[in-house]
Length: 205
Image (cartoon, rainbow, N blue to C red; front, side):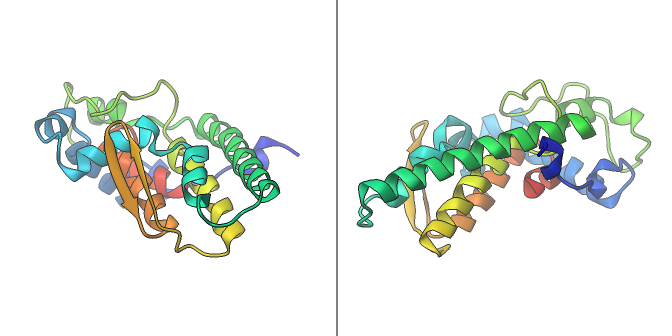
């Protein structure tokens, strides 16, 4: 009945003095730094960061890849693709309602202004930049893993299994997954390695 019906619950990461926030802050500061990632562009972490926003998170592309060769008729294909699309659209509405409800800062802001968070275990770096461009809207929760999760959950329920191996190429990077849950975990890592999200918001998404 309302976008708020599916709002993500609050998390410890929203408390700037919490252990969870401190862990997330220091992880993304170290792993999502553009200096670190750009110095190792061919590392798996850097490739993961680039793969998903370059098209790895395309729900219809993934659905077509997974469904190919499984003997589905035209109606089953139509039903599957429609269900994936509906789920991803609904998850996007939920994501943005959640984002603007909590209005939580992004790593690039948090790291540059860490002297204002009251947390002795977070150190300010006024020149820090995320490896991937940080979008101009709040952090919690992360949209890409939410949409990937919505799309893969439809696939999981449709085929009644998580073990659905697929290989996908995006941005010149090819990645293979044995399970849908493995792809979901990869999408979570992508936003941390890309530097634009704290891990907890990605996991929650």
